[in-house]
Length: 159
Image (spheres, one colour):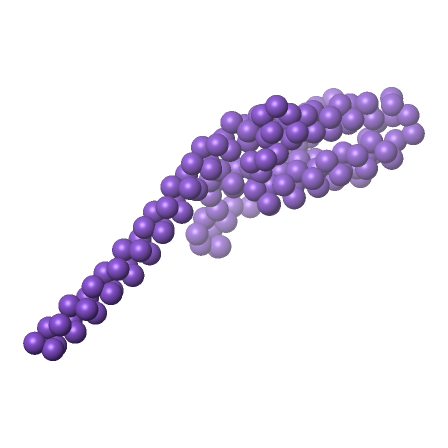
C-alpha cells in the first residue's frame, strides 16, 4: 500500500514537471514563430534597402551625396512609421549600426559631394552590408547553418 502511494506521488510529480516543461517549450516556440512572422515584412524592407550597397559596385563607387542618401534611407526605415528598427534582434541591430557607422565614416572622409568612395572604405561598407544581410537571413531562419561544422560552405569571393 505504501509503495503504491509512493509510486502514485512520484509519478504525479514527474508528470507535473514534465508537462510544465513541455508547456514552457511550446510557449517559447509559439513566441519565436510569432516574432518571426512580425519581423518578416520589416526585414524584407531592410533587405531591399541594402540593394544600394551591393556586393560589388556595378559602375563606379558612390559619392558622398549617395552615401548620405543611403544612410538616410536606412535611418528612415529604422525610425519610420512602421518602426522597423524595433524588430531587429540584438545581432541584427549591431550589424545595422556597424553599417550606418561605416556609411557615415566613408561619407565624412570625402572632401566634397562629388568625390567617390575610396577603395578601402568601399570594401568596409560592402562588408558591413553583407554582414547585415547574412544576419537578417539567420534571424529569420532562411539561411540555416549546417549542423556539422565540417560541411559549412565556403564563401564565394566577389567577382
